[in-house]
Amino acid sequence: MSRWLSDAVLHFQASRRSIIKVVNSPRLNVNVVIFSLREDALQVLLTPTDVANWALPEKSVGAEESLEQSALAAFSRLPRPPEVYLEQLYTYGDPGRIPNQRIVSVVYFALSPIGALGTESGEMAWHRLDSLPALAHDHAEIVAYALRRLRYKLEYSAVGFELLPDEFTLSELQQTYETILGEKLDKRNFRRRILEAGIIEATPHRRTGDGRPAQLYRYRPDAVAEVKARRLFP
Amino acid sequence: MSRWLSDAVLHFQASRRSIIKVVNSPRLNVNVVIFSLREDALQVLLTPTDVANWALPEKSVGAEESLEQSALAAFSRLPRPPEVYLEQLYTYGDPGRIPNQRIVSVVYFALSPIGALGTESGEMAWHRLDSLPALAHDHAEIVAYALRRLRYKLEYSAVGFELLPDEFTLSELQQTYETILGEKLDKRNFRRRILEAGIIEATPHRRTGDGRPAQLYRYRPDAVAEVKARRLFP
DNA sequence: AGAATAGTGTCTCTCAGACATTATTTG
DNA sequence: CAAATAATGTCTGAGAGACACTATTCT
Image (cartoon, rainbow over all chains, first blue to last red; front, top):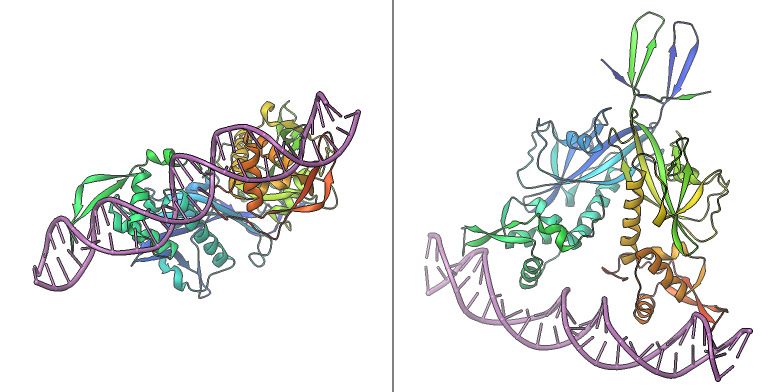
């Protein structure tokens, strides 16, 4: 069994009666801001804390674990990592961001397609972004930053598809954009631009529903690099 | 005196003859990729290592120190922090990126105006980006990523000014852009766009030299042209 | 037939990019 | 006046945004 170093200073009294004082590095963990579209609203997965508020999913970084693996483990205890888009957001490490502790948090940003991730992970729950509960520490600031980043990325990358299932209609895609950006978009311009960009292609299927059936499209992952090779992160 | 935890596993034999095995968090440090224009070329500050190659300036994160403070301390031992642009780049933490050690590095990206920072900091030296020496660990990859980010940021933000002194001519600014992007830009288009963006203003001064004296400009930090439009610059 | 949703084309205006000559200073 | 560098305007093509009607299916 092993034990994690926890506080700033540990005292060990060794067999020779000498005192060894060990000052550790800041403690390192990982938080994840994971977004999903549920009930036509953008939602974030949160985990309850003992002091009647909520926090971002969190995990300390295992000795043999990459930061990404830790991030995946933070919000899912499933044996196989769920299909989510995952990207590093920012590392928060100011002393004082968490009272009486020095914790450096590498924060990841994740997008989950509808239904790809349930609330199967313990007591976590999805919360609408427009009515978040009180959040621990600086987590509200972190969520706000993640949202800014999501909106910004929508404009120059194909990240919107990561919130939809494999096949989707153009109306669904447009609604996704509208929900995230918080504004209405023109249908014809939206379709023209998304189609001319060549990042989606029609599938042989149609979705039947209330009115006229809609053509289903799928995302072309191969075409992403084509469109704009302007990636912000490695 | 204190001692930093260094390796993955520490064994302590306590007075009661029981074995306490302490597995520590990954060790945390900060690296900085700092760019400057010297001799009409983009250069990066490196520190020599004992194995005949070079590394990015580095510092472990002190218990009471913010990550930014650590970053500043990594490349300058000056009592007062030098005037540099500093921004967090990415956090590298794969196990195995550094043999036999688990080190997570928060990497910062910095820009220094000409002359704002000498080589007064120990044995560090500036190296041209187009002829870098061998770099330790994954530092070559990190530098490459920092350069990508610098080029990308040039396109939508006012970051180019951070490499110039307070007052500069439009020709100098254009040369800065050309050096970083590695391509020639059209003089009239460059001037039109940079002036219409409103992020610089003329000063009462001129720089006299070989030919016709040039108008000096200064950057207007108040006109935060942060993310005004996509592709604000060439 | 009516309700519901899908699908489609044109015009205008702004802006990026290509391009060459004149202006001011020094030696 | 020659050399050196600074400063300036126009045209054109591509793409963004505004805008309204027809098509298909179901009940």
